Image (cartoon, rainbow, N blue to C red; front, side, top):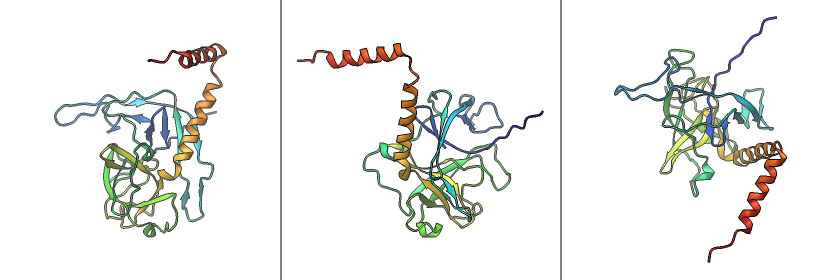
Length: 242
C-alpha cells in the first residue's frame, strides 16, 4: 500500500516558549535558494526546520455557509525552542506593551507571506505589503470584535497561501501583532479582507500556553520535583539582607 504525503502551505508567527500562533521554515526568505544574500553580500543563515508536536484549535472555530470564518486561530507547539537571530525573532503581543491603543481606521499594517501573487500560485520569495485598517462596515463586520478589516487598495493584499501570517504594526517598542490573515473576497482588488483580531484571543492564548506548561510539569520525574521543591524552600528560607 502506498502513502500520500500532503503539504499545506501557510504562515505563522513566533511566540516565545516554542509556540507558533497559527511550514515551519524559520529564517527563510527565498525558498528556492539555500542561503539568502543581499546586494552587498550580507547573508542570513540557512533555514531551520521545525516539527509540530502538538496543536490547539480554538474550541469555537467555525465557518459559515457563506465562508465567513470565526475564531480563526490556533497554537502550534514545536519540537524545540527557536534560537533567535537577525532573521528569526518573535513578535510582541499587544498585551506586552502597556497603554498601546487598539488599531483604528487609518492605522498602517504590514502583512506578508509566500502566497499567491499576480504571476504565480505561490511565490518562492517572501513578499511584504503595507495595508491600511478600514472601518468594519466595509467588511460587514459591524459589532464583531473578533476580526479586523484591512486593505481594499488595488494591487495590495494578502492572498491564498498567506493564511496564518501576521498583520503587524510598527511601534516605538518594536513590531506588534494585531491580526492573523483569515479570509477575503478575491485578492488585491478593492475589497478589504478580514483578519482575526489578536486582542480578542489574548486570554485564550495565555490559558492554552499555561495549560501546556502544567501538562509538561506532570511528566517531571519524582526526583526532579523534589529538587525543585528544595530549591524553592531554600529561596524562601534564605536570610534577608539588612
